[in-house]
Image (cartoon, rainbow, N blue to C red; front, side):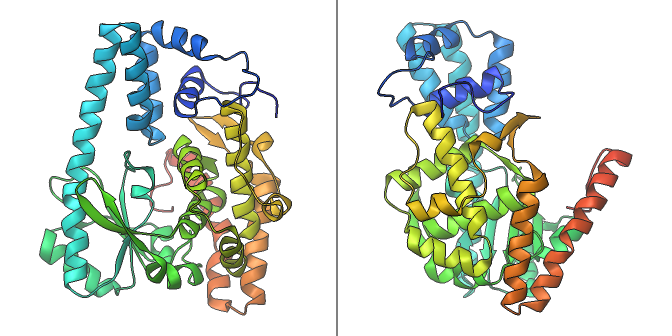
Amino acid sequence: MNNTIFPIGSSKSLTILSRLLLPGQFDVPPPSTAAELNMDIAEISREEFDDMLALANSHHVVMRGLEVFLQIIRDIGDEVRAEWAASALAAEHARIEKAISFLQPICATFQAEGYDVTVIKSLDHWPDLGSDLDLYTNASSADVLQLMTRSFEAQVASRSWGDRLARKWNFVITGLPEAVEIHMGRLGQTGEQVAIAASLVRRARLVPVGTHMFRVPAAEDRLMISTLQRMYRHFYFRLCDIVDTAALSETDAIDYEDLRFSAKSAGIWKGVASYLAIVSDYLENYRGKGLALPPFVKAAARFSGADVFFSRGFLRIPIMPQSAKLYGSQLTTLLLNRELKNSVRLSLLPCLATVAVVGQKITGSDKGIW
């Protein structure tokens, strides 16, 4: 790729954040040098800073992005803008500390009751944190409902059609701004993925998060869950997806052979390979070095970063024909594997999507559907 602003339609805030999070490793520096980044930061207005902060929040990169911003602005000697960043960092740190103070006893209570529980998605972004606290357990719905209401006086949030299919529940706990979303025995937009779910707990590992320890998915499972979320459900990327995947790659945490085997079994290997290709292209553009992907990953990718565009605050993936073909491939695999019930679940996705679009146009919201 050439070193132009990527992707099409990028905003100034997205460009600054990308350059903060992905320091260049170019053999020949592009026009967007570190000096120009410093100038952009030194001249940023309060309105532009607030816009960048809002984007960083929606992309789950406030801590990582603003820590670099603060260091640069302090080196420049700008006390006013340094205070903007320091104040935002302090507020986000307090939010995260509070969320973790709830997450730890929730996980401990599950384990004390004899239920396996794994934190999915939320801690992938550490030291940032997702907007919800997402858990996976193989406990039954009845057991989870009893545990959450008895131990934490949690209220059950209203469930959409998609929530019911996916077998997930959202709980609201007094004092905790974030919802606690618990997936039970299934993954995927319609709960079609039981193969990935079945091995998730067994492959999970303990990691330190602050002063606590949590069980999180193996790197390969993390990537498959991210792919299901980005390539098969939301059809957009966040900057955290780029940064998180780069970190996994650079610590040699990814077993690509294992990833290919597991993703093929689940029918999402082409989606996983495309996800990795998009991340690699974005990294190559902003820092001059993509992921060290094996040839078989590149060969399986059905599209790349060239197809991504920036719109409505996110890095968008075209649904037609790219994502539609991935959906068809996943459904075909489930049918070939004779997973008939899961195939029926997945076949409902286009109907849900259509109803969601109609609902959005009529009422301005797809609430109750997704």
